[in-house]
Length: 83
Image (tube, rainbow, N blue to C red):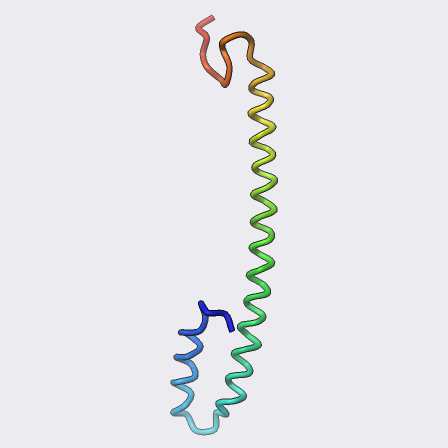
């Protein structure tokens, strides 16, 4: 089970313990499946964010390279040469 979700799930289990007709074992299995599903979805989102970061990093590197190629002499990196 995802450690970040454990406190919330533990509270649910404790509250359900007082309710007649709720099978604790079944509830535990349901919460376990929910946790696994949420963890899998979180992993997908994390990979997408990491991929986007790589793309942005490449874009920034490309922009820096273009700025360097467009500059002449001591005026580099977008500095104003006062020409």
